[in-house]
Length: 477
Image 1 (cartoon, rainbow, N blue to C red):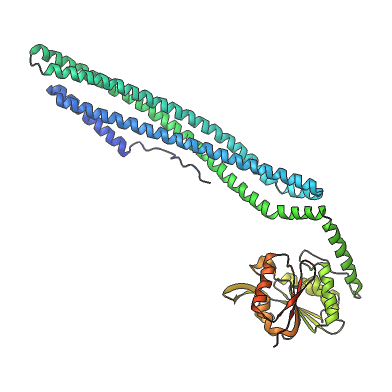
Image 2: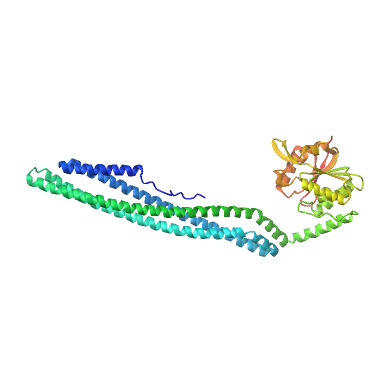
């Protein structure tokens, strides 16, 4: 948003003022010389110069008045735009409240609305600034109206003086052409009258100019103050706009999704299915410690159950997991039944340590190896990607199951795409690749790139729910 720029001060001497002063001084000198020498040409030249000075002053005053009127109109328009932005924000909040009531998520209502406390405070501050700006704009418009009336008065006075001067010059010219003593005496009287009129005109113009200067300076101070308030208002509106975009992008979509799931009864069935799947997973193994706690990054229980069923049916000798956590523990339980091994690649040192501690609690440290692999850059197909350090996986061979559930999306674009280009040479000829989080666009794009680049991927894909896909691999070493 563009703020109005108003000069904070005005210099006393400017080129235009100096030029007007010089012309005025020359006009006075020419008039005095014409009176002294009784030469009508010098006196007429002084009148012409005086008229030029007056016209220049009137034109400058008119332009400055028009400029300030334009600035005041711009400030009023910006205030209206700010008011419209605040109205849109209030409408969005009303829609959010209606959506929360209709979806029946009353517990989330307090949590979401609480996040807007700072936003509401900023909104109130903006409203106060908008009111102050409106008052400043009204005052500026009143100043502009007064200045316009003043300019009209100056122009009327100049027209009156010009008419009087023209009449005196005409009469003086007629008398000077007669050459007799009586006319010469009358001409001297007319010169003196004209000189007195010029002095009165000069004094009046000085008073008018001083008054106009004070009015313009007062008007400039008012607009400068309004511009300062407008700058604050503009910054507040921009900040509010950014927060509103963030709100619509990150808060509204999840809430609408929850609303749709609750209304359509999908959420209830997903919770029931996950609970049943988790119970089935726990019954499959003789646990040596309390079951690891699920988190937002864990495989869904239904997907985990499908994965463990596949492992028990195929009995892979080596499983490589991109990422580590709850799934690593349950895979280690499954692989421990027939002597297989799990190798998990984890870029976060703390997460790697937590998974190792969980494996140790369950007595599975000999079955699963969690390798800390910080992310490093790889050039693939002309692009740079962040993936697990090469030293953690370059010696792997005969990987029969590759589970791609990392790195996280936040580490970079297409974060999981490098898995197959970098580990294709480590896969067994009958390997299976499992890619999680297929509900996200980046994972779907990664799968499309894999299919285009690797003909070894079988055409038939097996979906394990809505978020996970299993791919067959028929390559040879």
